[in-house]
Image (cartoon, rainbow, N blue to C red; front, side, top):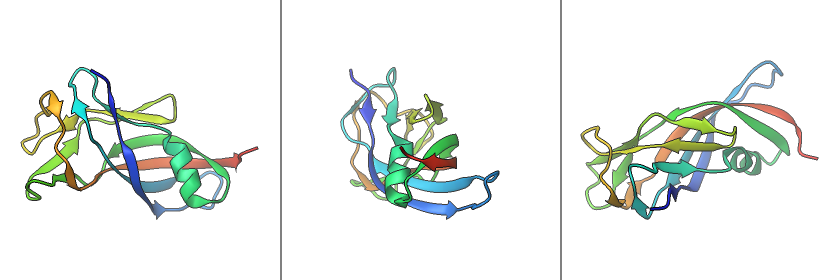
Amino acid sequence: MATISGVFTGIQHLRVDKDVAGYNLALVTFTLAGTYAQADNATLTAVPTGIALQRRDGKKATILHAMCGIPATKASNPTQQMSLGPVTVVGGTDLTFAVMDNGGSEIADGTLPSQDRPFSVVIAFTEGPRFP
């Protein structure tokens, strides 16, 4: 099976530090759709590009850390949540993670439930010089 990839739905800046030595925090929301395979996990790709496009300041974002944010809820039953397992930064641009069910176990292989509320991750990042 192929790894499913998230689709950005929004980026909200939680902390913006203008100091060169500082860092920024952003809440990145996204949806997932398709056939989930535990062996493959799921991904969110090109996160720095998404942040830079939203900020529109032309500066390159460099991811320092990422962690699960607000859990998603199932469209079929919005009282049931889905969260993310440990979030790993890959190559400085992409995130990989397991998708967890309402009880805290990894979701079984198969079609991923549609989301009423999207998944989210909190990203700590720095800003570099403007893109060339």
